[in-house]
Length: 242
Image 1 (cartoon, rainbow, N blue to C red):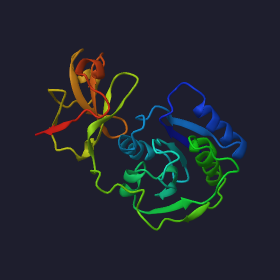
Image 2: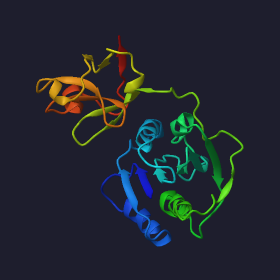
Image 3: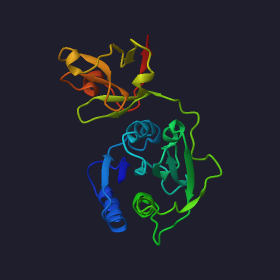
């Protein structure tokens, strides 16, 4: 399958145009919308989301990833293979955590060029065709990367920030819950939050944190919106309190 991970939003033509290319070049291969609302123009926050959610897909999955504020600039266009999954997109750090956490990785610069390459929509013109090629099990159309311009080795292993606000107002952090000390609390927006297993463990209106279904520490309010009630947004800092 081909999995889309973008910051295009839920409105407008961009996702539809990319899927039209996939339909033409890889007919019969399902295209799954994982995130259409990844943190806008924020490869760093998106990298922690992608690494957490990609683990639920089998080897052989092709991820078409576009969070690309530097489109048309000097950032490289890359293919990354990490533990058998293939990722296509901008080399701006978006794949940093995927690469770092994998047991085995390979990386290529994309050499293939379309007949028409717009300056501002490489998702449609470059990355979608390459993702279709890979989904058809063609070899990566490029050469092995020889530098690390796409890497961000200074980024932390886990990011103590809010990286996503979901439809319900829950605030996902870049922290893997399994790596937090037992009994840890999280401080955010001048509040110290106790941990819980699930929503019903806390009274209605109570804020808490829990391990979400994809392994990230997530801040929530039972029967409420954590973003509105706590004033959380993407980039809000989170502190681990012992």
